[in-house]
Image (tube, rainbow, N blue to C red):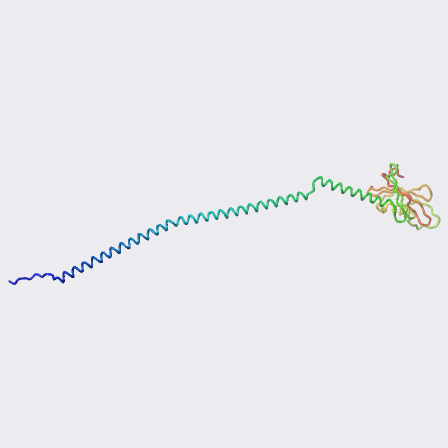
Length: 254
């Protein structure tokens, strides 16, 4: 029987197996080390991210507070400006109201103005009377107060002239309302009083104490003016007013 030979690994094979095992261990160690580095990197980076994220709210909060402060300052400035504008508007309105009140006359001022107007009217009336009383073209005007209760005053104007006549020959005073002489008497009365014939009532025209004298009494249609005019006949020139009474009443005046 032949002897079986058992195979034994050679040294070369043992060396190869040992070298392969060492390589595998080295690779595994390298992988472990790499994993350790990767995990450490992740941990480190994670801590940095966490710290940055933790700091961000504080930064946001600070920014928000700053914005709030700025907003409050802006609102405060706007409110201040609005308040100042409102105050200025109120002051302007008060000034305007004061100006209007100052421009409106008070009762005392109104009374003074009325008194001034009355004084002016009185002065104007006096000036008118002075103008009527005094020297006029061709003569003078004299105003005489009367003791007669019917007569307010008597006016003598030496500048009055005869009104002219259409009559010829010897004059005879006529009191016929349709006569020329009557109409010329009315013309002389109108001339002296300033009243138009259509604006007056002829109360009476009668003899003035002689054939060449007449007296006419008239009043305005509104009853505000009453006159008694004394007339004289001037040969070839007609009737001439010589005196005029301003009457208080026509009753008893003729």
